[in-house]
Image (cartoon, rainbow, N blue to C red; front, side):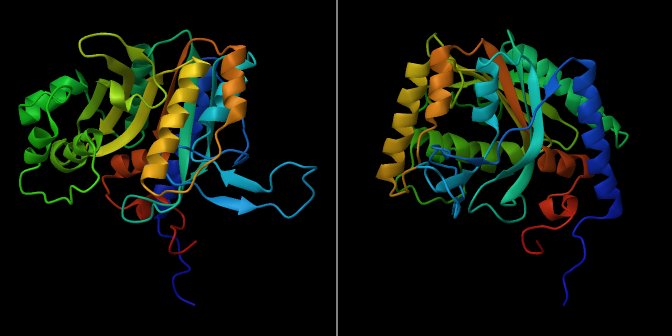
Length: 323
C-alpha cells in the first residue's frame, strides 16, 4: 500500500509539539484553567455556513436522542462552564466540520479556545497577539501588529465603506473575480471581498487585527449601538491566513435564541438540514454567564503561517486523504 507516510515533516511535527507546550505554559502563567469538554454533543452548529458531522449511538440512551453531533468548536460547552463559575478557562483539542477538505481545510483540525471573565474583545485581542508573537518566536520570527477597524481596512484597500455600501458596489469591487450572484446576501459579498481581494494582499510578515465588524456578522458577539451599530468582535490574520476569531461575548439568552432562530430560517431557505439548537447553552445563559470575551485560534492555520505553507497537509501527521 502506498501513501502510508506522514504528510508533515518531522520538523513540522516538532513545531506542533513546541506550540502545544507553549500554550500550556502561557496559560498556566496567567492562571487560566485547562479543561476538557465533550466531542459528541446533543446539539449541532446552527451557523448556515458550517456543516456538522452527525452519528447514531447504538447503545442504551435511557430516552435521550441517539443522534449526536461532532463539535465544530468547544464554545457552547465552555460557556456552560463559565455560567457554572469555572472562571478563566481554555481548551486545546480537535474539532470537526463536514464538507471542508482541500488545500487549506481538513475535516478534523485543532482549535485553541479560551475565555477571559470581565474582559472585552480589545483586551483579549492584546493577549491573542502576545500568544501569536510567542509562537512566531518558535521559528525565529516576529511581526509588528497592525490594529484597524473593519471599516478602515475596506476603505484603505478598496475605497468603499463596507458598513453602508450597497450590494452592487460590493459586487463591482470584486473586479475580474466572477461569482454566481444567485442567492448571495450583502454579507456574502463582504466575505468574498475579504477572501478574494483583501487577504491575498496581506504580507507574510503582517499581523493584522481587524475589529468592530458589521452588526449583521455578529455571530455570538455583542452589538455596540452606533451609526451604524457594530459587532464587538475581531479577526486576526498572519499573512493571508485567518488564524483567530474573537468576541465580546453575548450573554443574553433571549437574543441568543433569536439568533439561533434566524440561523434556522436561513438554513431552511437554502434547503439545508435542520440542526437541533443547544438548549443547554440557552439554559446556562438564562442562569447567568459572566461578562467575558472569548477567542478561537485555528492551530493548523497558525502552524501553516509559521512555516510559510499554503497546504494544511504540511502541518498534519496525516491529512484527510491519508487518514
